[in-house]
Amino acid sequence: MNANDKARLLGLFFWLFTALYIFVVLGIGVAYLTIFGLVFSTVPQKAGDPPPEMIMLIMAAAFFVALVFMVLFSIPKLVAGYGLRKNKPWARTWATIASIMICMSFPLGTAIGVFGLVFLFSDEGKLYFDQQSYAGALGPNQPAAKSWQ
Image 1 (cartoon, rainbow, N blue to C red):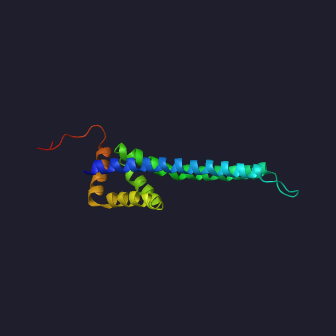
Image 2 (tube, one colour; image 1 turned 30 degrees about the vertical axis):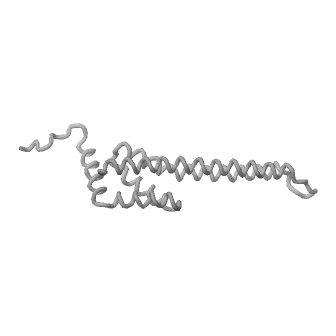
C-alpha cells in the first residue's frame, strides 16, 4: 500500500467514523426523547410539579445543543476526509487536527487516530505531503520530468 492509498483510506475512515458517530448520537437522542416522553406522559402529576411539556422542552433544547456541538466537532473530520481523498496539499493540517480529535473516541476512534498520526508523521507521509505542496505551488504549468537534460 503506497502513501496515496493510505491517505485515501484515512480520508474514508474519517468520513465513515463521522457518519457512524452522527447516526449513533441521533439514535440515542431519539431514544431518550421517546422514553422520557412515554414516562412523563404516564406519571401522575402532583400539584407543585412542572408540566411534562416543559421538561420535554428542556430535554429537547439540551439535545439540540449537543447536536450543534457534535456537528461543529465533525467539521474537521469531514474537511480532512475530503482533502485526503482529493489529494489536497492542505489536508495534512486538517488530518492532524482530526486525528487528534478522533483519538478521544475509544476504541475505534483511537485506532483511526493513531493510524492517522503514524501516517502523517512518518517519513512516507511527510514525503507524500511535501510532494503535494510542491506540485500545488507550481500550478498547471509544471515542467516535464528531467526537463533540464
